Length: 145
Image (cartoon, rainbow, N blue to C red; front, top):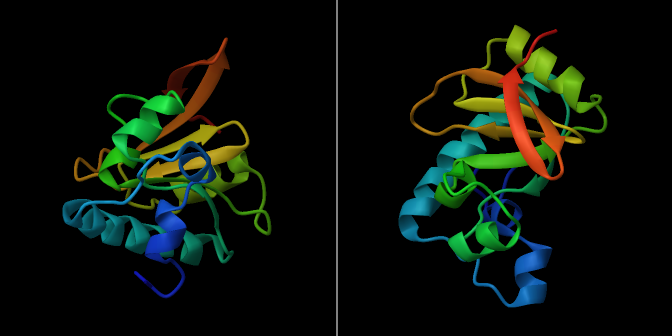
């Protein structure tokens, strides 16, 4: 089911890990409404970058999020967040830099190594961050060019 011109419900909920492990990753109706918000936010990102996005991770059920070690407060579980790359545009740093300069409205935009995490949760804090990983534990600092 298409949510927007370029993003479908299936794309924002698919998970190879959930399929392999037999985890139900079907969103509730409330989460589906949030996925509409996410898809529209991703359309703004796509338009800003003038490039297609490859979604690595969108919605995660509680069980899936726990299995992969996601934050217990993850916006992925509410359907507001996605991890993505835009190979035709450039690396994650170029993406975050461009989105920050364009003043894209979001809750969080995080450069997380080889991908970008973006969320459109209602708080809309407009945080641009860099994740640093040490022994699998992430710490976050303000993104600086």
